[in-house]
Image (cartoon, rainbow, N blue to C red; front, side, top):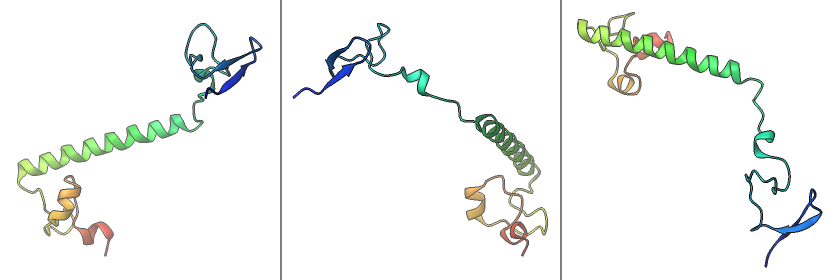
Length: 104
């Protein structure tokens, strides 16, 4: 059972098997794939936000490495209490304990 489509350019019916989706010969039915893909309007802003977040994470990781070398890694910078291991496991760059981070 072969499904058949009408090729509007040639005016003839072609089967699914006969189609070549990205063939340069122009035998594809419909528009080209690359003509249907549009750049999202918010793409530049989203990319900028991702770059900014990555730069911020790199700064925080560098500071955490410095604290590790100084021997103050794992201590809250606000109250000098220990940061819970669960927090350090999830966010090794954490600077504050849970209470100070939530400002409790």
